[in-house]
Length: 206
Image (tube, rainbow, N blue to C red; front, side, top):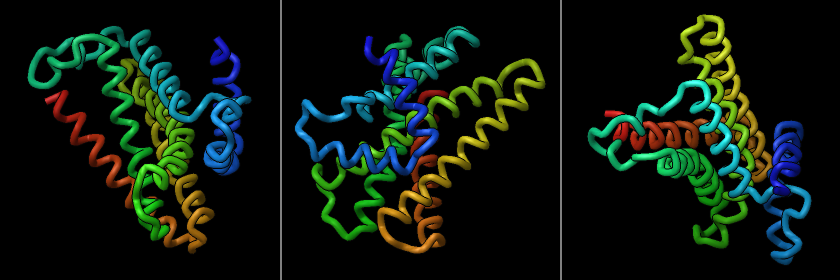
């Protein structure tokens, strides 16, 4: 039940001070487990809750998801909303894993669980509002009413731009490199993440 309190608090902190919150996500891992994230929702759970809320809103507006309704191909594996939630967590988790892995690679650090965990936790915080707002934008973009479709498209576009901007500034701060180099890294991360996202999603909608 504490999530009802700390989810909006954490979401607001991410939106208002994204870089500070990403640094907080990594710094908390240095504390004892019982002392970590006492005033917020932990990053992985935050991402999962955001995706859950996004899916709930989509179902409330559109009803049964087309993937759940379909029984063809790999869509037959997604027979209910719980399985659909797991699929969405995996799809958006790609963004967090790709960014964290790239950051470790660019920092010339050996990639292992210890080096991957801090940036992955930071990225879970960043992906949370990204998944929530992008989901809302996507639902709006497919609405029958023209005004809602326009608003949905604008929200989705603004979400993608904001995500890329924060990613660029995060890489600049973390790696101590130029803004241009950070922008190129962020662009590569976005391309890899979106390509992997679409490739996996295509298996369930084709």
